[in-house]
Image (cartoon, rainbow, N blue to C red):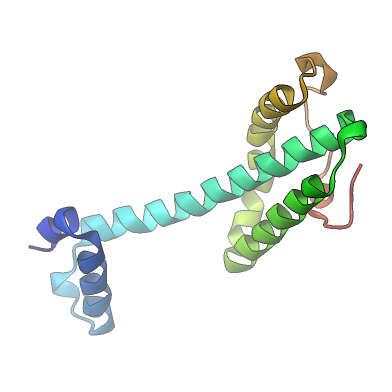
Length: 143
């Protein structure tokens, strides 16, 4: 019954599962779908961190390699993304250990976006990220 509800009305299913957990009625839990949803939540947070890093890296690239176009909106975007990452890491500190890998993966995608936004050639940008994680996330730092 709970699996059918999961497929038909996720909201109702989720509230029902929470109620079962709250009441310690473990025999009625939809374990398979609960496990799937918990894993999906973890992946969603990691994906959000990746996307926010990609945006920061793209703006840092544009800031450094197109200084004549610097704007307040670029700084606002950097500030907003850093704030959101800070909140995400406060809520899920273990995501901090994912940062090195995510920066490596996000950087090439940030280059692609920076190329489109700036019109600069791909070889205008270094092949590897030249900034530390501390610099990337520091609201008071720009290269």
